[in-house]
Image (cartoon, rainbow, N blue to C red; front, side, top):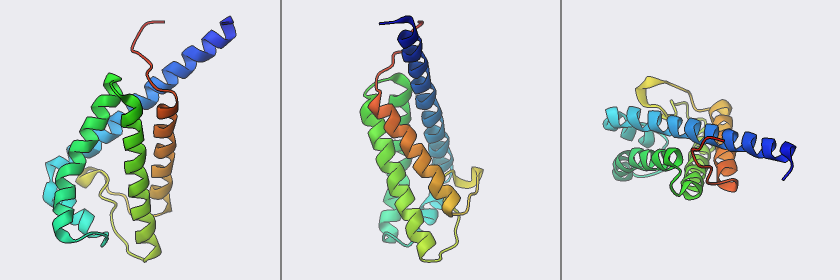
Length: 150
């Protein structure tokens, strides 16, 4: 391997590590804010009018745990390809829910980060989720970069 390609590979490795840490940080922050107020998060889910109320409560309990598991796997580098694919799937589902809400003319806070950061559902929040989906897919395509000194 040439020196240039080794430098490019190292740069990509660090880029993937940065992406993993960033995505993990977002998921941990999102989970923490949701766990801080599960009733508010269940209400935020119900406001989308996509699932019955009883499922909103279950989702509000399960989703933050999923976000924590995905975040931990991304940071630890354990099954990060699977974690990145789960993150991408979650982000796509969130984007679809937001697109549905926008198309029905419902004006609401996305509930993405609980009460810590309000963000109205709109094309900006949809775009953010799609960009994060691309980041997650990028991690899945170039998996397992160990935390090592190069």
